[in-house]
Image 1 (spheres, rainbow, N blue to C red):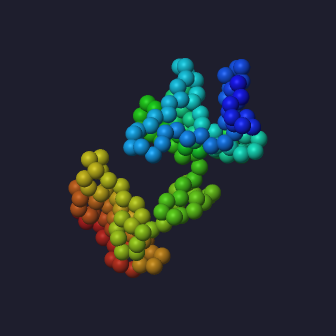
Image 2: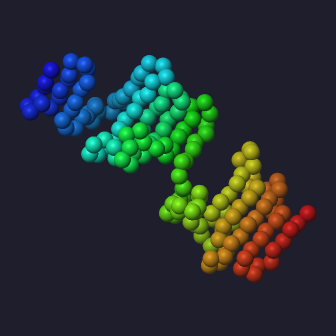
Image 3: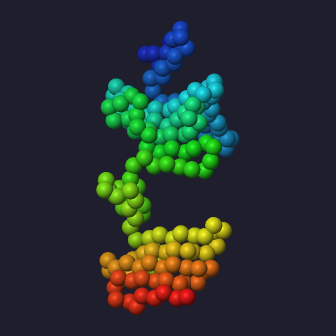
Length: 173
């Protein structure tokens, strides 16, 4: 079946459909819209964002055998390489490459790279919280220009502080 001028929609006898143009779902009303891609058990639901011969671009999908949501990078490969995975059975996520935070470029020699947010804050780069998310247990940041600071806490009280700019370091009981 061919619908539209110049074959805008083509539905083959095998059920494969091809749209030659943009597809819009819904309109400007305030109603909610849902798009569901549903398969049989242990099958994949994938959206491909590709160029050319379908071997370059990205794909996002739910992969039924692994039961994971995965973003893949396709660089001259139809199967792609996993870039980011969200696991269905828990709240874990995995980045397959290096990560830059706060404007830092991802660097191939570093797994994580963070740009400090200020030169005066204990937690201007990293803050690790206790299990209840009440108190910081570690804070790291920038001290003065290109200097570093590391603070460790117990029950919300600073016990250890190290500085690289000549400020007195201390370890408290």
